[in-house]
Length: 318
Image 1 (tube, helix red, strand yellow):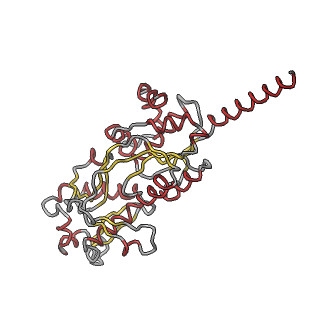
Image 2 (cartoon, rainbow, N blue to C red):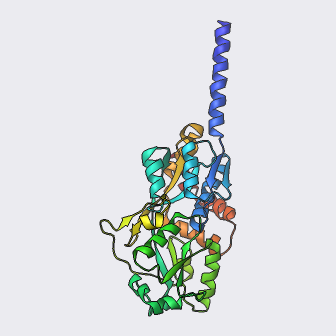
């Protein structure tokens, strides 16, 4: 009987230790480069390290979507959370890991929009993609004197940067226009300079984001979505030639994704991540403070969590 009792006690402590280890598993969050996603990542971190009393780390430099999804698929803790999954930007990763492998779980999404923009002071010259086919219009945006207008397509690590090159090719505009591929922060500095001096600038962007609170911007009109207007083969070597996208982005859903391995490694955090329901207006508020006002994202996130514990508790316990 004593031997059996000892075995049961040992088994109890082993189970307790394993349970504790699972709950204490450190959460790793991808370090996406746009302000809204950066804010979301820091809010997730603040919830885990604050009221949940756990460990969470923003993995610096982890911004490539394919690498993030592959890491979540492995479930080894190298990257556990993708804070801002946009579609159709991540269509290949979505098909492979969410629908195919079922290794990435999702929350309730928020609504996002994306398009090509100019400052409103250019609205008398340009308002639609058809205007971009005018060589005189393109010449207004020619920075380097090579005969082509520049547009900001995005950061080199973003899948959307490829998509905008596909769109310009599909619209037959690649002979008049060329992509400028630079980091988001560099672009924002260029936008501020151009806006203050009323100079031409053409760029990709999305909502929610603080730019739309700081500047008066105009989205260019595009043909509406129709069957066959979008065919993306982004993982092929000849992705530009093999893809088509000659219509407007439809309004999209944007998710927080996490590795399903967290359901075993840290089920409380997995539950919280599934329950998160983000409001675009709130994201815009975070982005405004971080991106325009230069506040530390850690401070913004921790302050918001402290002041909104009713919402946070619903995510943790819901």
